[in-house]
Length: 306
Length: 319
Image (tube, rainbow over all chains, first blue to last red):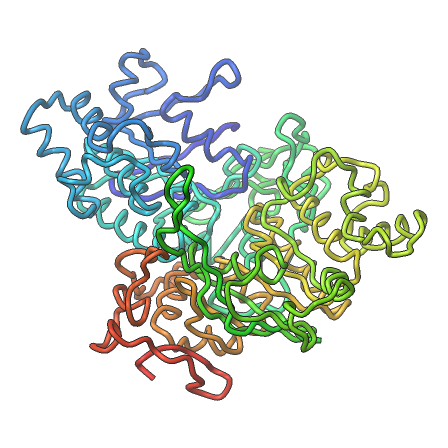
């Protein structure tokens, strides 16, 4: 990822959309400083949580942030839960560590966390292992763990990709509800514009490690200003209407180790200009709170040559 | 030519015991399903995991034998097939699977992979085979030099094109598409869906597309069959089903699928509970524990499968 900036307020949902390899997951890992080293390093920038720069913290301080202030839900709950420990042990671990609770208050807190995600009969479910839960229930359990300490920020990385459509609908409703009641900010990583349209307040579209367009959900859907966003929205089949022909995006996503000099989308872009191959376009405002990085956006050229 | 399934059932035994295996029960993966596809048509089969859609695909591909019911090809039952009939069937009915990373053998060159479905005794000489391979690779839009390369040298979208070329090599009439775009990146999906549509028009193929992606199914399908817990709940002409779903499950499934625009955020029917355990499905209508419009008789009486409108079949007590 390269020069990604965004701001998120309490209770807000920001969706990071993009294809595989666009840098969505690395962005999330960077926020909690979990980018595997030495393969990757955060070479610059700041991550501010309530005014504090997380990149300046020691690893010990960072461990207290993760799970308490920032929590994560991953795509596949079967791999993110430990198969050898009961669900109770796994929820308890987090609550004890971050809240310092013991005994009955601890137990109460754990049950409350499970109840909040509507897990039926939590008292008996505590003693069960992850394989005894269905896919949808497992994702609720890992969300219960993530939300048990009432974090300020929840990072959900493709939380419903492994779920069936009706179960996905259940989960998204529940997530919205819990988010509203606890005032948690959510960063939702997804490649599904349907999910974005359903629950996000704002959207950031990523391509080849950068945010190419960001704005409120309505702004991005009604006035997509980057050719990549436009192409993505046009190339998807929609359940709501029958399309005669899908508009294809030709070519492949670029190889991140050999990014072209100019705009990485240029080789696939229907609106390519000579300048696109030379210089990466500046980020320009399209409307209030809506930005895009493209030479075709009015004002881009004026901004580049002051 | 027509491919027809009549009352297909497939039960898998649930066994216990180590040396003496005892059958404790049956997983009713498919419990009396009748569908048909005619030449040039596309049948979309949608449902959630555990609905039996993949089992149905396996039966169509002769990878499993049905427990009961029959599969008719061109009017002839597969159970009565002789050796020549099987050869003819396997040529006419081909498949494309979900994940092009696991459906292509990494140790074979693309040329070999694509030529593999051609029968040994087809009487084709090596140059003829090579020519046919080149033809189908061109049809799916792969470069000329592809036959000499290995699958790892291609991207996900291109691999799915190889899988499609392999399915086309025997001049099939029917292609079973099992989640053909689910494993692909969003920008690549449109390429593959368009290619499938284009090939269908050009070659007059019939497709059976199995998908949990209702949008992709809608894009290709002309007829739709909705499955739940091993049974059909509704069939009909695709646009009609999307416009006016009859069965409450179809309605919920369509409302759970997310439309592409935020202003289309609408009242969703969120189903409680989960897909039932196929070993002991609920009595009566299998959907009744989750059904928002359940009637008293639903838990005891199984609804009858019948036409409630012209060309619209459903099994539900509401009609």
